[in-house]
Length: 293
Image: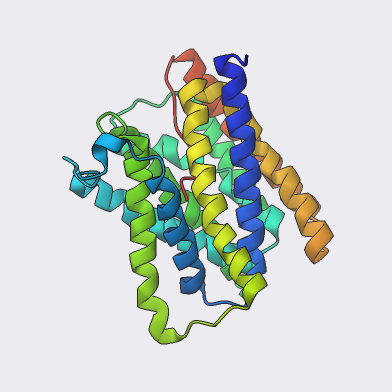
């Protein structure tokens, strides 16, 4: 029989694996319109969540007392999702994953404005270190390649607000409802891309596109379960395994070898995130830096 912490570690590991596979499939699907991939991510995420809605909520599952906050969570989550999908299609896998680790940095900044939290010296130091890491990875400039580095940054900005909104929503709303509304928003938004053309997939591609939604849906569920059974600060370090998976997948499938600057920048971003989470332990608080894609 596994302890609660062991269950938390198991669910976090499953979540990391699922997100890594979803990222891989999104990068592979670059021959299909982005809106079409969003549809599969959203629709099959909805299918999964309907299996876990409590039986006593099947008739009124959509009822919420905080519709505006759900709207903002979905809006910023959708912007983040579009950004990360665009980045995955145009940048090396390890580079995108490395920058995505900066979410806790921006969550720290946003918590000042949205939650009124006080940020001390150590966390400001962590924010500075993280920004240096992002600059090293992206090498800001004016080349056509540099333009795409803005998308993973937009992703972490969007997801930082999402983390704040989920912290607020989770005080009154069940996790499945928060995720379900987001999957519905993704699905509905994808229909606006139909005029720009969707491509009919063959059987194999159809199966792989469905897996984008399946793995994305399960990844969010397992992430939430991990935080339910174990403290965020204990299981979060496992998230950095996604960089290992990204390096392996990128090399084996696309022959991508991460540059020294990417690895150095990733190291600084990870150190920054660890400092932030260590401070959360000391302050007896928890920051949810979940992707919730």
